[in-house]
Image (cartoon, rainbow, N blue to C red):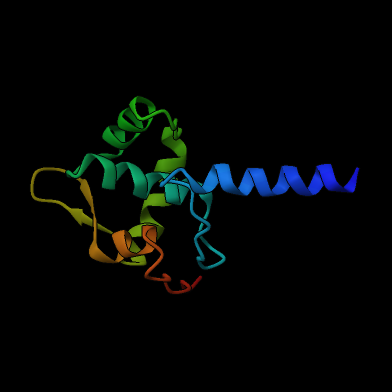
Length: 114
């Protein structure tokens, strides 16, 4: 029985490591899985998006992020420097170099003041 459990765990790790989007990222306590998903949508689309645009594109990419979650999480991502807010033509967001570095595992965002 123990041999089967070990095999299953090894197989799961092997299978999941074949997917480039599957990474164990180290982040601060304030970050959630939704934050990773928001950053991934902005990196995947490679353009500036509104909050509604993030919601729509997340659904098109197969990861549905509810609009209220996006509204709640975007301010923390902007404050941490992972996203940049563009206000020239309304409120649009782009991923920063720090945000991309976080997704690739090369950057750990700072803790935020409460």
